[in-house]
Length: 116
Image (cartoon, rainbow, N blue to C red; front, top):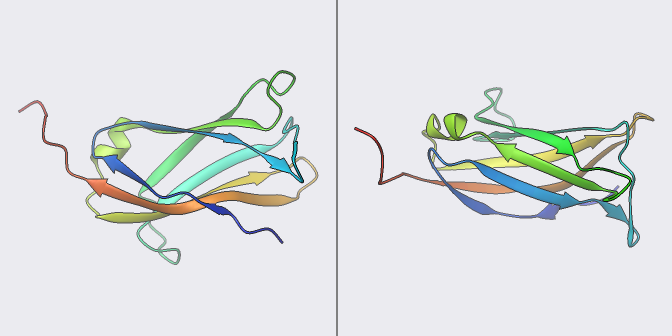
């Protein structure tokens, strides 16, 4: 069982955010063809309410094996009222194996510039 890398970051409400992952094991990048990657953020791990959803897309695995782009939409981040969220990103491989390579805390900041 592996431990996810802890990556905390700050997100301004109403902003989008893209995280790039280079997923590997023992120093070798993994080909993720056929894998499903998903991520969610909640106020607490045990909370049923999802506050943010990452939309994850595999990079070209022939050119960039293990590459994944996970994005939070600006409209979704604008609706968050919590100060901090816990998140993780999970990979489900074609063979059914699961791996959570990254997890952490998203600190939410209020935006100052906005259309009134």
